[in-house]
Amino acid sequence: MLPETNGLRATRRKVAKIVYEIDGRDFSTLEEFYEVIGRVLIPGADWGHNLNAFNDILRGGFGTPDDGFILRWKDSHVSQKRLGYRETQRHLERRLMHCHSSNRQSVRNDRERARQGVGPTVFDWLVEIIRVHGSGGCEQADGVELHLE
Image 1 (tube, rainbow, N blue to C red):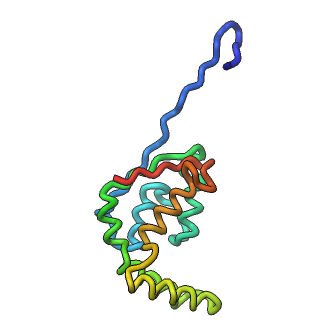
Image 2: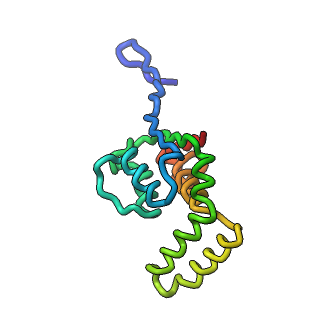
Image 3: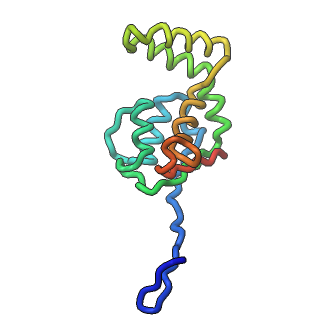
């Protein structure tokens, strides 16, 4: 039951979440995804353009609403293809050049699985990161909803 104030009953009003939209046709690489997502979610902000920084943006406080938002990913099937195993291999090659020596074997193993068309892709990584911040995710309090279209 909601409290009464001066004889008036308070009512709960569900506020619609802000909808941000990206289009899978607008990018073909992980770096291009970062450019698009930065322009859409936090225009003009300086951020790390990496998976960890992307994860941080979804927590709010970087210009995105603290109470969550909807990310509508149009043409996600295009992104799923473009950010598939070929892009995953490319990204892992780049990561291999810059990662700490203690991580190299793990990255090599991931790269080999991607070459074989096995395991998660860049697209899968991004979707997983977003879903962590939504219903059922370990950071669901962030209130991010992903709509793949």
